[in-house]
Amino acid sequence: MAATIGDNTMRSALPLDGRAVAGRTPGLLLGPYYPLEPSADASTDLWDRDVPLPADARYLRLQGTVVNLQGRPVTGAWVEIWHADHQGRYRHPSAPRREQVAAGFTGYGRTRSDARGHFSFRSVVPGAYAAGDVRRAPHVHLQVTGQIDRLVTQMFLPGHPLNRGDHWYRTVSRPELLTPQVVRDDPGNALVLAWTVALAQG
Image (cartoon, rainbow, N blue to C red):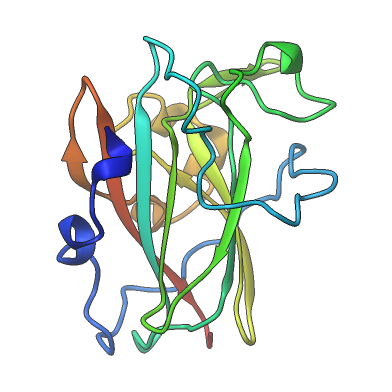
């Protein structure tokens, strides 16, 4: 299962410290489902390890790095993520189908980047959903608060067929900056992604 994947599996996919990055990570809207009161004890696990994973769900392991535009790591940045469960349901009072959210899914996590700017989360691969007449591709919301900059954005699943039809994906001139690298894709188990978040100054 994804929880057994060690950090060393993914380090090689992350950028070397001090290497200039392609550009600042684009910002996108906060969205309506940011938690009303983010839990003070939120962790990097968005899925309860004591709850079996549904048969139609997959684990997601997101390994990332926060850097500035010179490629220098941003230490101690708060990284918050929130997203829908595998069926596209948010754990939020105003979200449709909120009472059907998977029992083991917390919907929100946060951590601080370490001395090399690294962070990681364990969750489930989010599902697509409809918001009124708008169809959203699967995505993960992030808020990254560095020493100087704060970024609110969304990360999209690499190669997903709904990406190009997603309104917010299409508003970004360089959507590849919102798309992580696939490190491991095991259809019967876990999707492991590596992503660099670039802040202007840090």
